Length: 303
Image (tube, rainbow, N blue to C red; front, side, top):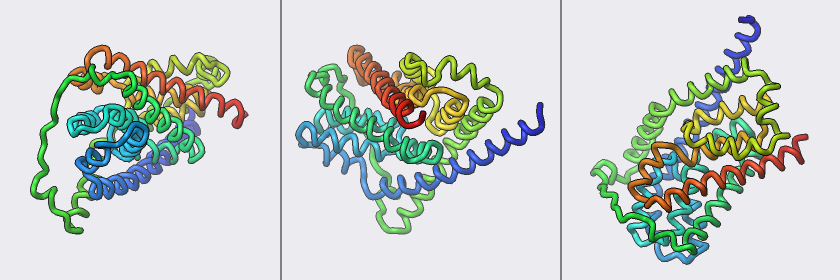
């Protein structure tokens, strides 16, 4: 191997890993503070009784502030439904939760910059709000199985003094780092290898910005090849650097964040087959739509 290429690859790995870990830790501190201030019961209470439209905005808003992957938001979604909140508001929460989590927003900003992150958040948030309302209007709630999530906070979790809350925040940050650091390192490592060894001409020819058909294909393959956001974002960054179109990159990111085999397995116990199919098509539609938004942005502003 060329020594210069090896040094450049190692430098990229170290720089990217350091930046993403620092961003991740900072985001998790903010998330910990949010979780201490707003409980799941608060979310359910605020959504209950809200009219269509406002409830969807609130649902998507809380979804975008919760640090969950496509699997983690499902129990809260069930709790929101069981509390009597509108079905559409709960769907807006379920759509926004994995797509606009604080981790994704923080890492996107660190890697792609705030302009791209702003377009991503605006597009996915608006779609979560609108599609939640569409689900409600179509009466799709009848395809939800009646299940309940039972859980009780421990005595330690009920303590509200500053010391106890600070300890819980620090523990939460440590737990998240322990659960995600390996995914992050693997993602950066794969990104570094893509950056070093994948021919730019090959990637650009298959999925470059001049090939809009790459967007729905990228959205479709994102789900089955489930990758956590902490791993997907550095990989997407390297693919973009090697010539993959920004639209295809974002479609891949949304598809991988919104659907996965584990989350679909969990949802099959909550959604009847028709609703599960509609939900998967919805995520693929969001990924494709967002991809074309970035495709247009790429053509107009990044020529």
